[in-house]
Amino acid sequence: MSKDQTLDDIDRAILRALQANARVPNAEIAREVGLAPSAVFERIKKMETRGVIRGYETRIDPEAVDLGLLAFIFVRVEERPGVEHAGRVLAHIPGVQEVHHIAGEDCYLVKVRAKDTRSLGRLLHEGFSSVPNVISTRTTIVLHTLYEALSLEAPAAAEPSAPNLNEPNAEEPSRG
Image 1 (cartoon, rainbow, N blue to C red):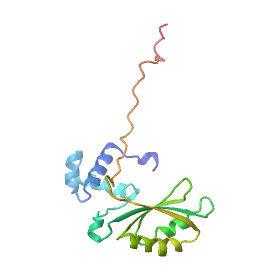
Image 2 (image 1 turned 120 degrees about the vertical axis):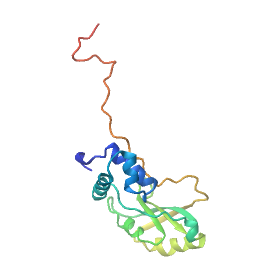
Image 3 (image 1 turned 90 degrees about the horizontal axis):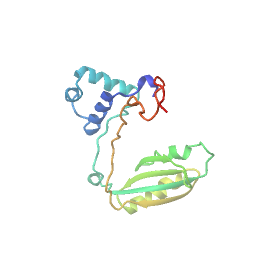
Image 4 (image 1 turned 120 degrees about the horizontal axis):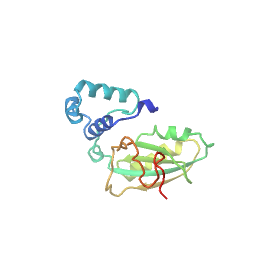
């Protein structure tokens, strides 16, 4: 995002409200931030256009749709540095929720959901083994999720820096 498109404190407050409940009416956000609903609407539209707001999703309980098994799979591939072909292929495998290109011995960290260990095995055998250049995978099954945050905390707008009282002021002669 360029400097002329930085987020101000009102944009950040709007983002916090939308992350807490994406269905909150603009009028309610407007009351919280002290703007007219039309101004909130315009700010939201601008953040959508700029890609700050990427979309709106419904969070579904994985257990309710019989996808209670969560696993993270480390994938090592043989690709030239900077080439991410395998990662793009991994992203299209059913059950894959996230693909991260990582530093270290492995190349990708993939988050998947499956019904059970048998389904996970099928996913690895039929999905991951068909990806070109995959050398190896290591799978970690999650026993229980203690905490998972889906929202992002945008840092506060930069405050003007306060003068350092320990340094002599250029306008004042130093005493010494």
